[in-house]
Length: 173
Image 1 (tube, rainbow, N blue to C red):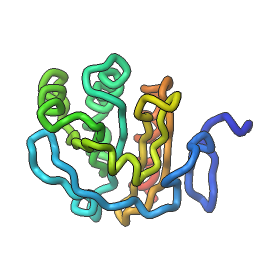
Image 2 (cartoon, rainbow, N blue to C red; image 1 turned 90 degrees about the horizontal axis):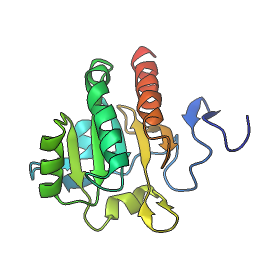
Image 3 (cartoon, helix red, strand yellow; image 1 turned 180 degrees about the horizontal axis):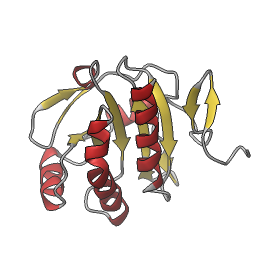
Image 4 (cartoon, one colour; image 1 turned 30 degrees about the vertical axis):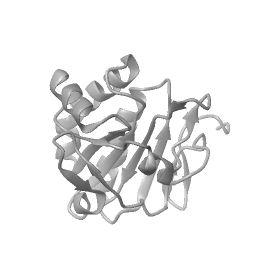
């Protein structure tokens, strides 16, 4: 497999070699607390333990790519919950914008407002073309260890399926 193609394994953990730097497979996911679309504080560590977390960073609410991505997670949400995972989306939009976005597209999962991008930076989510916030998904196991990282600006729907496959493997094993 070329250095530009797909998922590889390191120490039995899936990772995407296209992920430039930052938090990778095998790392402990940095804890954080951010406001949800309802304005309630959400702490990552409080979501772990009994469930895995699929944490996805995306550029902006209501843009075509981000809407497709959110709707793909929405359409697979039941499969994620049945497999034992919570889905959490993060962007720098405000909680109010997230509330409108979630309502407009009937999103059943949590959206978090990372205004200022502090959490995005702590995960090392790269920018696209140096300007746009990147699109990266992390699958975090119940113990808080990142098990899979997928970075993509263009293959938006693919990482939803990849994340679900990893969550199912975690549940089985």
